[in-house]
Length: 289
Figure: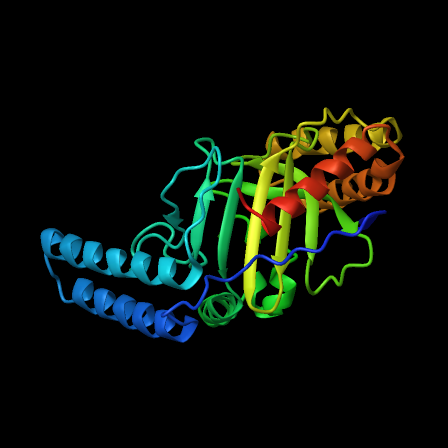
């Protein structure tokens, strides 16, 4: 995906919890061992009641370790108690393969912030690559920070993110702030609606933060992309109404529309307002409140 350069430079350094007694290695040693034990107990046929009790015990310890490691934030409009983003601690439950961290969110899961350490993030990517050899994870930790599917495993709830255009914040090193993007969150292919979500992904070497927020600026359809959009929508209708249809052309037309969108977004009169929202999201990651 092409990047659009914003003129200003934003530096974001989300602080670690001061003098945390728990280290990333402590957390990983505990949770890896606990998950393995829970999986063994489940395979051995322990009752639902016994597994539920063991699960609750692991979950409580998991939360305690993460809160000690990462600290707790008070963010206006979000729940006082963050969620443990990986949630369930053994592999028969939905969400077991999410990234471990603390997830703050509003009621609609449209304004979110997930915080974890780079060590936990790297460990997660390596483990997922081993268990899913055909997935994005085999591309490595730095690449995964730039992929849409990262949102599904972190702050997306049960929705997927589709990025329309990446925004580059001035001269900031992409390894420090690898992605700010406009796009959509959806559970289904709903055509090509205008982007309504800003995504920011940041890694400073010690910590990883992923955040989303609703776009307040009303983004209008880009006239220069009208033909590309119409061609994609016509092909989509053909594919979904034809048994065994080849979706290769649909993918090509979809990519062509996103390329057009990225090429023309900074030419729209709404772009300045959108840029300010992107900077505000970066500032929020820097100082969540």
